[in-house]
Amino acid sequence: MRLAALTLFHIRLPLQQPFATSRGVLSAREAILLRLQGEGLEAWGECSAGSVPGYTPETLVAAWDWYQALARRWLGQVLPHPADFIAAQAEALRRQPMAVAGWEMALWDAWGQVHGQSLAALLGARRPKVTAGVVMGVKPSHAALCAQAQAYLRQGYRRLKIKIKPGYDVQPVAALRACLPAGFPLQVDANGAYTSVQADELLRLDAFSLQMIEQPFSSTDWEAHRALQARLDTPLCLDEGFQTPAQAAAALQAGVCRAINVKPARLGGLTMALEVVRVAKACCPQALLWVGGMLETGLGRAASLALAALDAFALPPDISASARYYPQDVITVPFCLDAQGALTVPSAPGLGVRVDWDNLQRFTLRKLEFRA
Ligand code: MG
Image (cartoon, rainbow, N blue to C red; front, side, top):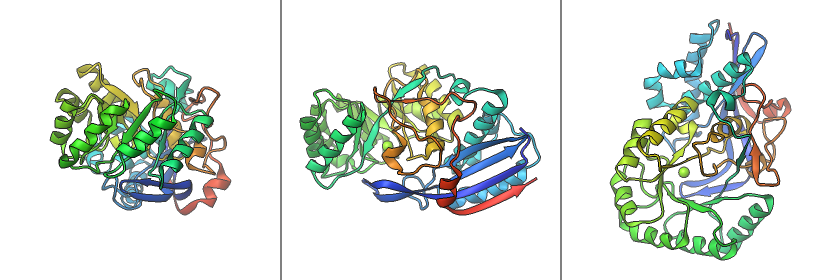
């Protein structure tokens, strides 16, 4: 596709309910949506960077500037295959992987539409449906936690994850184990809130048959993870704690973790996510791989779902129905759970979803357009 126009949309999408993690409370999600147009087609990407540094140092402001540079570079040119684009982005991948991921997602959408193939098919995914997982933020009481968990079960979710932090770990997990069906798949995520001196508190979580404990320590503290994993039956999972495919393999080989959260936005996009899967499976066939989320809109959700449909991902992803996070999404047909608690992987060419213009315009803070 020859790029005739690029439009950037900085959006702010209100959340269904405030989302609390060990890092703070979020009441709306900002993102940049980018639209590439050419040859009668339009392709979409999403940048999930934060409005301020937090989960990672990257911000939407930096991505907004970088996309303007990409517009100058690519307007009037034939867009490359996403993997070829990524091969030339070594520095940007280090500096702003979420911005890279947003542009690369639009390239996949364009490539799929030009060649009449769904994104899932392009990635090599075969499963038509993916069992959904749901994440719960920190709740004010155990009663509220259990009520919310049971509501999600009634909606059909088959795996729960809760955010934990020091002082909010063993007790909420015990409360959930008491109110959920025996053996219900449950995992926890600390977003690096613990230090190694608090390792004994995390050891107590071994009694609850959790699927995994995600990123208990700082992203740079591999040694604390390795030491805890050696004492723990529950698999530890790295999320923020690795950035590249080589680091994922090194962490698994060194016993730093047994599970890897493959989050395309954080890794620089789908090409890099595929590479993480390839190297992790090559070095450690037993590694538990699964797809994480960044509270994506329906556009990013469609891309993540296509990835999560790969056979390599044995565990449910952090991909929920649109309504879990957003009362109104930017796509015309929101993602909904079926009777088995699964989401249907889009099968139309490219991302396979369409933008709801009324909603997009309602939630756009600023817009910038470039034409060849
Ligand atoms: Mg995480």
